[in-house]
Image (cartoon, rainbow, N blue to C red; front, side):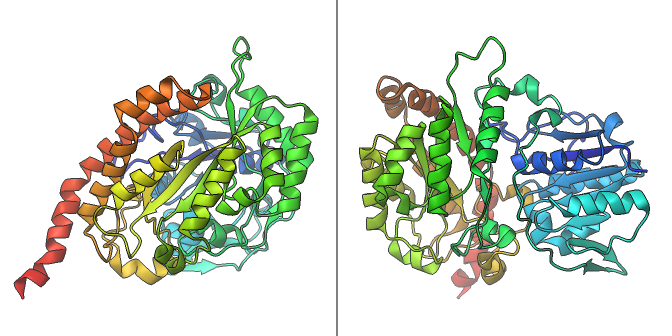
Amino acid sequence: MIRKIRFLEPGNLPYRVSLKNLYTYDKYIRTPGTGLMTLATIARSLVADTLMYSESISKIKWADVLDADIVLIGVFTFNANRGYELARYVRQNSHALVVLGGLHASMNYPEAVKYCDYVLLGEGDESILELIRAANDGKPMDFPGLAYFKDGKAVCTGKREPPENIDTVPDRNILYRYHKMAWHLTIWPQVHAFRGCPHNCNYCALVRHFGRRVRTRSPQSVIEDIKQAIAFHAPKGLRWIRHVLWITDDNFFAERDWAISVLNAIIDSGIKYYFTIQARFEVGFDDEMLVLLRKAGVIELSMGIEFLEDEAFETYHKKSTREDIIRSIKNIQRHGISVRGLFIFGADNHTRGVGKRLAEFVIENKINGMLIQSMCFVPGTPVYEQDKERLIHEDWSKYNGNVVHYPKKITPYELQQEIVDASNRVYTKRRLLHALFHGFWIHRIQFLGEYFWQKSICRDLKQELPYLKEVSRRQEEPAESH
């Protein structure tokens, strides 16, 4: 009889750290993911005693977890090591059925099955219910959407079709101690509105995980989720604070008509809040959409710019140009919406000075803030399959912005330095002072927070430099020997 289920979201910690005394996700940003919370909400429809822990929020109460019947751990690439360690600990200390899920485990199940009883493949909205019923009734786990380890090899029960009904509103109260942290200014309310993407960028794991067919939630479901998120993150006594809600979809405008219907629903609902949305550059040419965005309360678009060079766009199958990006940014800004830039370092054409070039682009085009990551090689993506021979290592805990491959025209050490240099050029004390006394008040607060967050990120990146310097030295030795 399945009477108790626990979900765990690991932090980004390496192997062999204390399982009892540490919790972390990021030094500043502690916002938990909504995907695992949604899955836990679905599971609770069958098992009332269902609870989730996130190491972004709290320590795990092991006395509570180890007597559960099912423990499901959701992992991305950057926290896979920690997830495997949690799975090993549960298996050694309890009789629970241990299940791994999430993007990394699903796309790299031949590795993940070694640490658990089953891997939940793809989206688990429907298969989690089948797993619970099968475990409860003692039936074979032979339905599509599972993988497991048998006779020394990974066995897959077959691909499962993605769910069509994705209207579940995650119950935020299902996450342990979330209500105690929800007021914190570094925890943003989040809503995920659809799944899938029609594009085919080589480095994107989401396309491979969710598919290229876009499946949307109903506007009514999105509005209800937004209302619940706002209410949850506005504790009694602090409701006067007007904050920002992050709609986390990578490209909210993949289905234009649906996006318009959601924006109109927000406007008609009377919700008075600020929103930040992620987008591709094309939305900058859609004046009707930009007018609606502004009217709905969207103050910022986080644009997946990725690269600045047309050569890189072509190499990684991203259908844009530098000129397109600039024109889009300017038009978005003309509508009173700021732009945040999301960038990738480590394209095949990148050379020394790429950090300076990026910083100049950000400053010249008045981009409000930025996130830079080195090329991320998630197992199952084309860029991973094509370039895995160029990987320095597969220590997944370092796949969080660090350089993990050998670029073609620059050493790993130099590329890591370029990321730090770009950040230091954009987030200067002079620009911080200017930001604090100019512009919209929320943008002032954001830049202040980002300034300290970026400094923390740079400190972490610098800690990896000695290792990357040695790696780069060894890389160059054969050439020098000739």
